[in-house]
Amino acid sequence: MHLTTLCNTSLDNPTQRNKDQMIRAAVKFLDTDTICYRVEEPETLVELQKNEWDPVIEWAEKRYGVEIGSSTSIMGPSIPTQTREVLTSHLSSYNMWALQGTSWASVVLEAWVHIDTSLLSALCMAAK
Image 1 (cartoon, one colour):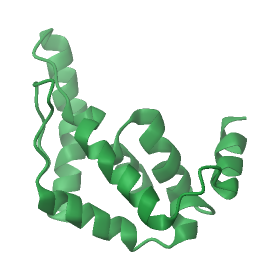
Image 2 (tube, helix red, strand yellow):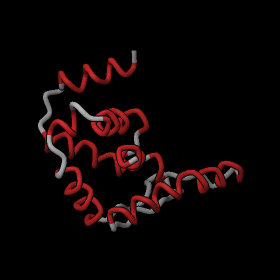
Image 3 (cartoon, one colour):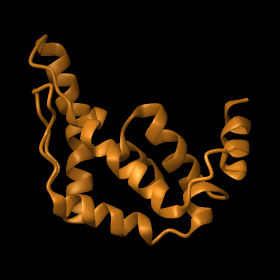
Image 4 (cartoon, helix red, strand yellow):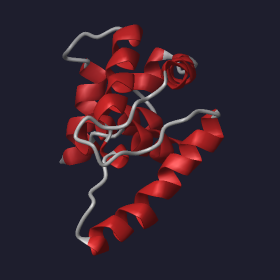
């Protein structure tokens, strides 16, 4: 059921967003990317976040040559403008169908960003 919903939503594009709007919406998730937010306690959760999320951030930083980082502040990390530009450029290299319609990457990018509230995890999933 969920995959059928994702496919139909992707094909129908009910929000009627164009490519640039889709990319801006995805990159905007960097401001609140789940993977970038960390807790200070309990120690078991701190360790879990470090073990599970640091590799995703490190992968993205290495793959795209950007700086992302993480933060325990409610304000989140400060994402450099260059990082936004690089990721926007990368997403711009996808055609419209790849962003919304016919590929596994599209399901990941369009839906996963919203489900997981993380552009980083979506990029990681799309690259696998």
